[in-house]
Image 1 (cartoon, helix red, strand yellow):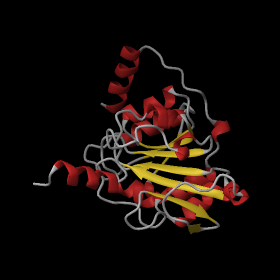
Image 2 (cartoon, rainbow, N blue to C red; image 1 turned 180 degrees about the vertical axis):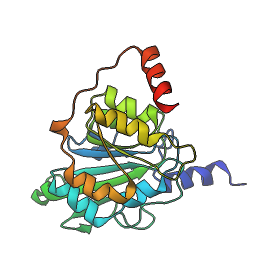
Image 3 (tube, rainbow, N blue to C red; image 1 turned 90 degrees about the vertical axis):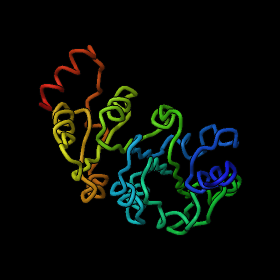
Length: 221
């Protein structure tokens, strides 16, 4: 069995927030006003993370004016390897290339064209990450979906079609039908990002939680 030091090192390599490790605050990417935050909550959704781990997806985000990407990978086994260097949890990209881990020189004018990518597995709370995001890309878990909507963040939901007894499509379709979000599958993610238009969304106003739960119980059978 690995000792505490080895376990902490393993979590750090996965981009985890290690208590007391000086990484408890939000990173520059997370505080960026044009950040895209991707979350799988407490689950694993490797298909979503793998779909995001693509140079053409980063190029799409940059073309739409986003300047950083943060991936919360949860219990997933897939670690980003195409948009960050192998073994790293953070990269600064310039012109399609990577300058590896570490913050960029803020005094360098070239920094204006940088795109920061980073990932981690878990944090005690994802509220700040969502709150600071210009776009949230989330799995279709109700907790994550309603947290993002409650914070009034533009939301693209990605449905996991492989789950047994899956009601994610029904939930996504219902909320999309009300204009609160847009949704897609991992295979359609790039196209959905290209087409995503936050100005077309309707602000979600939380209602009576008992009535809301009853409505979705009826919807999901």
